[in-house]
Picture (cartoon, rainbow, N blue to C red):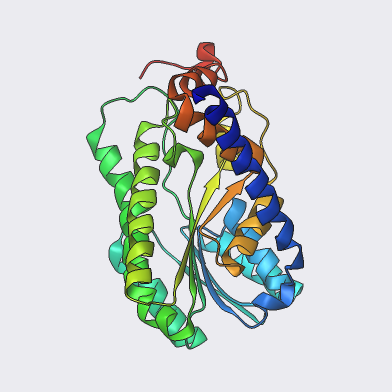
Length: 293
């Protein structure tokens, strides 16, 4: 009976997931037309691609990142693609005052907010934990506390619009992956905070959805530079990933898994055989490329 349960429960989960995703074929770009959206970390990678998708859908977009020159180029491209409006604010999310200012800019420039997409991430190393506590603190500020700060600042506008919060996270926020301990800690923190906040919204009848996005390896420039020679897994395309995140937010999903098979299935294994999952994860690394810190 125990073995049967271990087989049937994951299988039932897969069947339910298939049924759930099959009903999402009715997504229409018009769902995002005219929506007022903040996208953080939007100068490159997944954030940049989300900006382009939303531009094609006719959204009002406010993007932010550290590098002003890159943001300017993204804004120009968004306008070419048909954005209702596109503007940027440059600065570092290490500064909580800047995080608040981005939301204030959205209120002044867009007149409100329908969707807050939290996607930015601080740079980190890929290797054995080097005992650098200051680095952990810095990542917590950028990858976690700024997310909370922006959420708190944006909540009045999102309550007024019945809007959505989209939190871009990672498999490293669900499972312990080696060589990314500081980064992983911040992603676990996002999962805990926003999952708890979702519960409180329901209990308080607050009509603001929270979508947590669980991503595998994506072919962004930063990910490929950090892990391509070490993590022996084929990356997924950032353009498709960005679209799936937007769809998940539009449908107010609880969680988005991308790519589904490489993210959801390992979590089913984790629940029933965590030691096996740890072993399978370790097998994907080229240890000869890892240097001691």
